[in-house]
Image 1 (cartoon, rainbow, N blue to C red):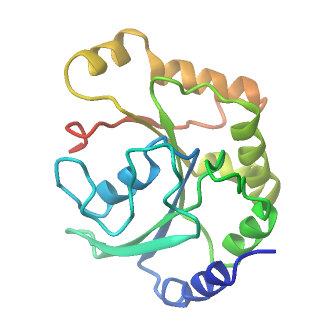
Image 2 (image 1 turned 30 degrees about the horizontal axis):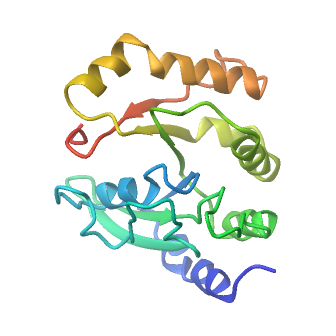
Length: 205
């Protein structure tokens, strides 16, 4: 059964539903891939380790996000308010591999519409295991093929220097796109999925 805290949080999306200038972005991914760190960057955390923002991070393979958490930020110059949502990690280290995933999807669908899904993957190990495939398939089942039109991939741990060079030379952005299209039988001409590298010192763009 979905946690009461998550029911309450989704109810809190009333403000976003009532504001035509409000956008919602939800971060998805495995525990330990840097999801909460990326969420902090998105809401403006410029600290060296991206650990001073509203989303709790961890250096260990422990899940810090056990329930949906969100933070609202106003985008400069755009008069747009973005609500960033950090979803609980799949492959949870505490053995709570989101047994309520389907219910969670249903509640997210009821929040008034997701503008962007952001899949966070560790750039050193970004291929999909069965766990990730099942997670993405649940979201496609809930939101339809339109889910892929609203998906962006963030590949983490691409620091400036060697990691960035390795990312470029290995064409990891092209490879993960190909992997997604093949795994989910998508037409690459129909779905253009952006892939963005990000590191602790490589995030300004």
